Image 1: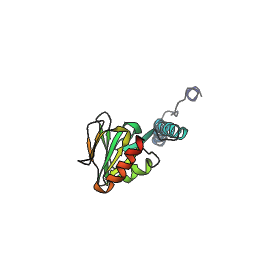
Image 2: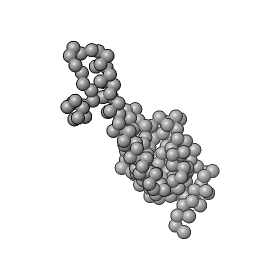
Image 3: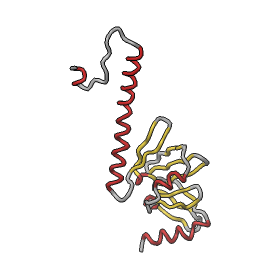
Length: 162
């Protein structure tokens, strides 16, 4: 009884039975998964309390990375993969298509699809070069603006400073 009062996961008596040990290990695994779940719930709560999503959970090979949306400069597609280019120069490769991120960020007016393979965060644009049809991002990366998107993109940028 004392063991459970101090939040023990399980209590195994001697002689140790394999099925009881496996059951205790499964309980431990379930409990260890909870902090990750609490992070997810914390992010969801923060996102729901404001009109804008502030963080997104990005799936990577060993779990999830939580990224502030404001830290994303642009997202570049390459087939079934996307690379998130962050403000501080880090790139994160994710096995998700660009449409996945477009759907998550659809209500965020800071993100604009300038090319079929690029979604940029307008807040992190340092310079737009109309003649070369590209944008210089705050992290130093250069993103091409597609000819078909150029007029609409310029209209969107113009709306920022009026």
